[in-house]
Length: 571
Image 1: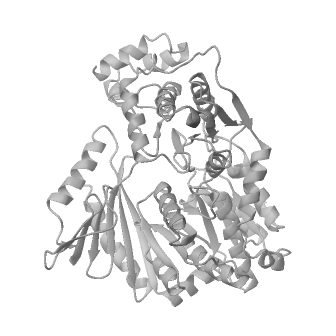
Image 2 (image 1 turned 45 degrees about the vertical axis):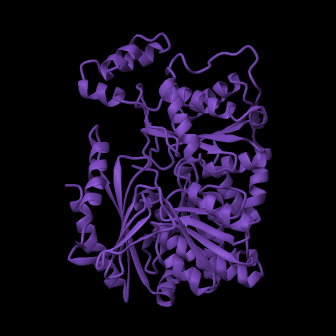
């Protein structure tokens, strides 16, 4: 069927409400809009679905959610009766239609004979990962688009380990979706559906007990609790309840929440984008911090899996730390705190992704830890953690990626802003007890471990031809690999698709441990690493610049030089 045929099929479907039909009728003279909504299905991958909301096959709506859920139900049913009995946990965030989509998913699963555990209200993403593991579920579904703008929603799918869906299962779901009719396929009715059990405060308490078990040095908080002030914002999202409660249990007496952003609202009225990576989102928090004399600001994204911090630079100005910087600070702190309190395990290990700063490796190795890389995504970090710990090779004390995601402990297998907020606050309090802000601490780490600077460039390629442009860029780089970039010789060309490593000077080929991902990496003669990777959830190619050098100024100059090259890739 052409996109026009699919549009007409939706327009005449009896499944749509009058309001939904009116939305489609309103675009009947806009050919480009019709094509953008119906040229394809939203692609189902290991991260599930993500897209803008609206009517159409290439939009997030109750029909695409039901369609995906039916396909997922069939994958679960194929696992056999014992797996089916374990059921599926379902969660949702603050976004518009998230609760509606979650309830629709729960009904479809129940109508397929699969028991469901549904949260009674919005909850953080890490609590879903916890619930899957805690209740022995076979899988989980989370309706969220994380930190994307308000127009987006998403559908994340998890497997029994509490991590996002493995590639083979995601491929099965995608295959079944292609075979199923979007309206006739989902099982909308059943005379005897499986039960839907609600989860509430009892699950919160179990989750929080595990969160608080990650505290290493509560005495450090108690030492400064009378004076130490911090500001917290959930950006209108799911961190609003559990993060302030966890910080209270940590012993914090002065957690000042941004009142306007404590209001649950999927339109995110106080920010352009609810992303803790963006400094502009913290403007209300900064006003309060200056007024109250707080040195530490913490913000979690709408589904509370990512967390960002702002710190006082010493002159009254506040600076957002990058995910790389925050992770390095936290890793160094955890090693020290665990040593002080006797909690550092045997064979301690740190995990990071291939696009995360090499400073983390330096911190780990100087302190006697091993550091391993994985592909981008917490399912890979979780997989590596399980492999190391089950084989007895190492005990992971922290896993993180540069995009503000941190995983601590063994009770979740995803990014966890709740636990990370507790750990970061403990760290900030400990440094306050030493008479230092976290900005002071970061500068001290550069002096100790060397200077590093990073930048992530987002080459946005929107529209129908965006995916094609992304594919063409990656193909061109493989067909004509650069010998030099920005006037600097390329030392090694690495292709994570086949795991190949090519020495540019001698032509010698070797193999890396990692393979199977559409990522290219260039190791430069000046010690910089450049990584090019298409996003799995958004229409953009990401270029990561990881520089190091003898001074911060030298590192920053390298970053600027390579950023100009990255911009040129847009064509």
